[in-house]
Length: 403
Image 1 (cartoon, rainbow, N blue to C red):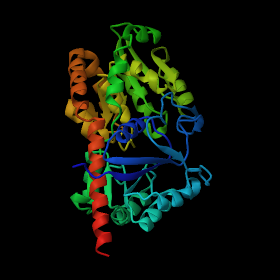
Image 2 (image 1 turned 180 degrees about the vertical axis):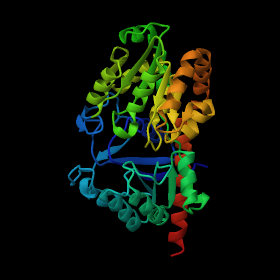
Image 3 (image 1 turned 90 degrees about the vertical axis):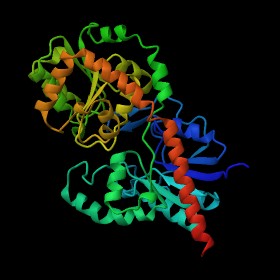
Image 4 (image 1 turned 90 degrees about the horizontal axis):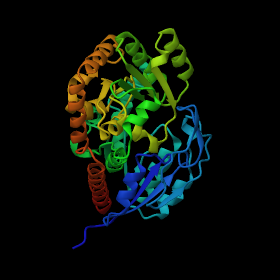
């Protein structure tokens, strides 16, 4: 007997490089008939990304292997409620005969509410979640934290099933009073197979030589947008204070802080040992991680941080602040001492000195990274997503039957 096939619509703000492989794998399953509605094609088409402070187009087939449509945005594209407003979703959802609608668009956008109301009218299950592991906001404003504490327990009861990407977010949802059976952990993943396969073709010595590093040098990587909440200055200061012989710090990423970081590197007297790669497109990133000795993510606001997944897939150990969401699920199981208190530059300095003096430790942690990330894979995400769909769709079907 064949399993029930669920009709599902995924609503996404734009194509994302780590999400597309999941859509491709889901589309190949016999128990789901899926469509993806994109509210913009930023990423698949060249567009200015304010986070990178440059025009971005990912060099990956983000739109291949699954059914998708572009629902025009009637908003301003600004980071505001009306900035993302896609009224065409109303007709798409109400005529699609969907069992479930999954929104990856946040509630702070008008599009979220269009999708929610359309799903309710069409009697489809509505699934959404958050990646936050704390109530604090990126800008640190206290009123936002107070607002979330009051509003979120109400908001997430609008979902027929809440999906969360990490154990930290799961704990947050339970602390807000959501029943455990209403929350499904769908782990944030990357295409592990692609990353590990690409690493096989990396000429590590050649890449390091292009940065001016010898095989014995210590190479530390920062892989993220150069934005204030990523705290790249913490790493730069720690690197300067550590005074590690034959060490190199490489910033793989672009953003509005680049000019100031370059100036500070000169002021600190380490500019000759610091490299700025600018924006690195996805096909080149395996070479970056594979050629580094350790990756550092010092963020003060990082709901998850899939760069940790990417780095671990390449066997590159990760040092992360305790504000990084993936630290709990990915870094701690490989080496808990590689997590430090956010903003503690002295602690980060000591960690850099420690790993530079103990290459055997780095090699051991790198091996543990590869073993652990294999258990945090797209297959786990897909299985959990299907579980969330079944629970939500069956719950709504029972509710509709009893009306």
